Image (cartoon, rainbow, N blue to C red; front, side, top):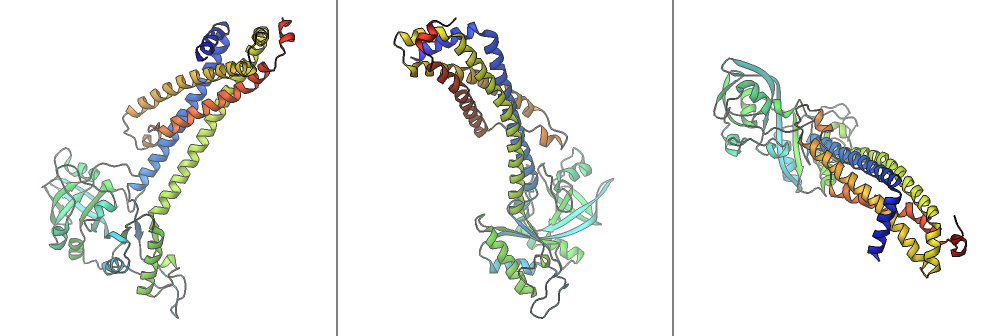
Length: 414
């Protein structure tokens, strides 16, 4: 059966070569459009999400603020300032709290190595900060550890950009850097990462030291903010509420007063970013889908032409005993064959374009969003499914019309 249908399709293709090839080209072009738009949309979504998450993933960043609601006789406008004591309290009071770190911050910190000098934002943190903020060391170096913290060691971890400014192509690990007049030993350099959101500047320009060293040198008691990571994503919202309850009890403010302890919720930011990304991808996909639907109209048109020009042949087949379902199958098969031939050609060409663009070196941060298409299996399956549906829809009415031909009238058709 399938051999007969294929032979008839190839015969029709030769007879209607120009029309068939143009229709296949339209289907191919529509497929290229939808695949590339979806692939670039997926790449854009992933880049935006990665840019956010590389500043911190699945964490809460908590600052001290000012109360905006009166509470138990206390007035609004009271200032809330956080210390490491509050961080320990959160760990003790909330079972769901996992990794934590304070962040002492200082702008204008002067760094010097030999004749090279620069200034930067420096932070004093716990060892867990590397995981919380995705500041992982390059090979041959390390991040600060618990012993550095306990012994108040003068050790320094550098962002990759500031390390390049200070040392050029020289390996910084083990070298001594002057930090505001105090010698520090470089223990590691951050792996390069793409980041489009930050707190007090990008991590590549940051200097990191142990929080104990920071407070002993600069005398800071209050932290800039606290970083808290829940153990599970499922209970993140509950953990967030508990943070406000614990801090509210500590400083006597209304637990619903979020301005008393402003919080950057990375869970919510990630969700919003993904929703925006999916929205862009859906819009681009619809644009490509409409282009593909135009190609489907072309497939339907050529099938109507084929039915009209083969009316006499259809009548003969029906007269010698062919069933109407065989006639329908023939034209449905031809419609699907045209759609899938053009579609798969377009899919392979689009995949080639995505592969070549992915090979392009990305030196400009803006190109991280544009030159980053991702052709995923869901996109490929969706495109093939759409092609099948368009092929079936484009062939259904012409096939039904062909099956409804009256054998007597068709034999007299010229």
